[in-house]
Length: 244
Image (tube, rainbow, N blue to C red; front, side):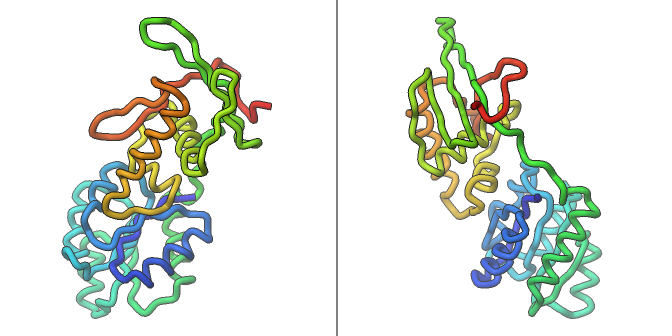
């Protein structure tokens, strides 16, 4: 399923749209204004944007123009500005669809699904199962440490000893391990593991990461300054699956 950026300052509308999208299996990164949206677009975390026009900190039309200068991501306007001139402007700015309020949430979801199919994003596969035996060599010492992840049993052992993680810590660890070949941003972690975004929420990710590090031991999760985190463990070829 797809990750969708939803920019809407009305809490009731935002929660309703987000809820319908999540029922369809999508993840949603929510914003109540334009602040932070361009950063998310540049990080390529999402497959589609739903954008209000009248926002408390700026114009959705201006934001759409900035987005189109850098990205061809599908964009849907969801707005009370329903005049013909506004709709024409929206499409001239590069919108793929323009939906006026009040609207049918079911119709909105159907239009979004259609756009995702046309763009090829609706069937995006999730990350690989991170189950298996992971290894880590300590710098300088050559000492080999191990961690076994079992997603079926929801179990983690480090150097043979069981380790208990909270639900949030488990989601973060398995997401990082499943994407071990790339750096993962805080925003991607919020989107894939928690489905929310608010001012200061990235600090919550840092706190959870610190807790996971304390339980795993040093070296497993590296900080990539200015971007996010990378899982440093590696698996022997062919070691994958449930870990049972």
